[in-house]
Image (cartoon, rainbow, N blue to C red; front, side):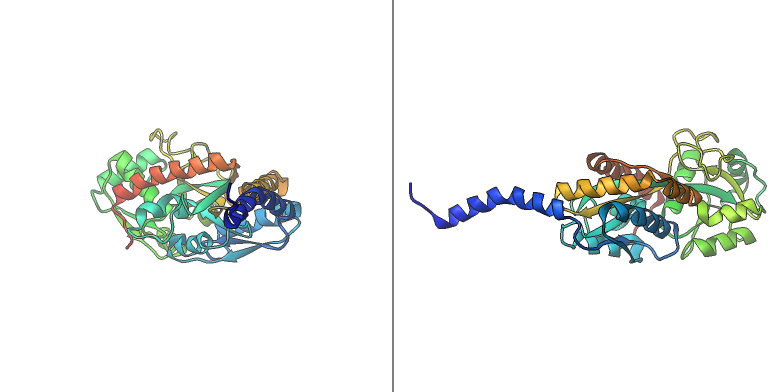
Amino acid sequence: MTYHPLLARFALAACLLPALHAAHAQSYPSKPITLVVPHSAGGTSDILARTVAAEAAKTLGQTIVVENKGGANGTIAAKQVASSAPDGYVLLLATASTHGINPSLYSRISYDAVKDFTPVTLLATVPNVLVVSPNVKAANVQELIAYIRGQGDKTNMGSAGAGTPGHLAGEMFKSEAKLQFTHVAYKGGSPAITDLIGGQIDFMFTTIPGVLPQVKAKTLRALAVTSPERSPAMPDIPTMAESGLPGFQAVSWHGVVAPAGTPPEVVAKLNAALSGALAAPSVKQRLMEEGAAASTLNTAAFGTFIQNEMAAWAKAVKDSGATVN
């Protein structure tokens, strides 16, 4: 047999590759890790990321630096991480927007939510809550449905922006209850909530932390949460399913993904550290204060979860007619 030096080198490299991966996993992490959050500082995503990262860092023995990179519904941050080296040192806080809604919302998107990433774990689910203006005489969802039907198409629903989970939850509500109303898209949740309190809009779906103080102060009225179960942050508020819309579910979520090709051993270390962090009582308490429920999945299960979420949100996007070029 003729000896080919080049083929011999390829064969040697193939034999050494598993050993190199194992060595990398054993030494990982040897420097700080960056967790890119696709939203600005101070919001639920940012608080959740920082809370979990600080606890997971204790197990990993390295700092997890949270980097906020908002804009374009999370596509900027997702593209950055998708283009990063697959070594476990740059991660993305994936959300219902980056890995559920955006693939259907954007006619052209700079990343592939499935092919460009390796799922690490789900971290938490965050239900939206249906809140109404004090001017709307509805004490529950069925009364709101009757109110909207009585107004014809004069009722206004606000949202933090076109294509956001709150907007699409409203489109699900419109479809399932067979309603007609006008969607008013704001540039963020805060101005929408301000106008809701003032009566310029009639109702909206939004995150619990954003309106919990107003609900407690009775300047807004909460009618239902969009999760399958009641939220610990609002235990007295029924679910949409309990309110006469069986099967209604529109839950925001947060998880961690790494660039595609990240070694399985590194992913396993990250999954274990993040899952352990979520079990800490202080982390559970902080998440509950944000209206979030800790929830972990292994890599394979989280990958299936993402694909199911993409399919569910695709229908909502189609029904809404929302699109971004």
